[in-house]
Structures are given as structure tokens and as C-alpha cells.
Length: 43
Image (tube, rainbow, N blue to C red):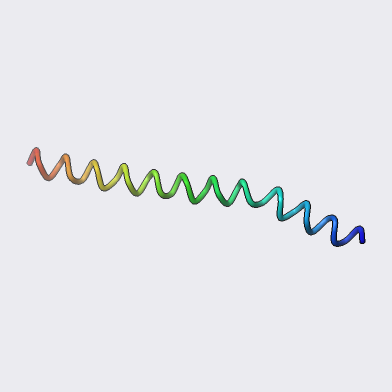
């Protein structure tokens, strides 16, 4: 029972971290493509 609780707590703690990493990666990707578009327009 303790083990299940520990695993569940671990998953609950990890989910926001994983979500944040995915979000940051997506934001970086979008920003990078926007910058590339702007540079493409300027050059």
C-alpha cells in the first residue's frame, strides 16, 4: 500500500514537470520558427 502511494505521489510530482518541459520545448520551437520567418523576411 505504501509502495503504491509512493509511486502515485511520484507520478503526480513528475506530471507537472513533464508538462512544463513539453510546454517550454513547444514555446522554444514556435519562437524559433517565428524568428526564422522574420530573418527570412528581413534578409
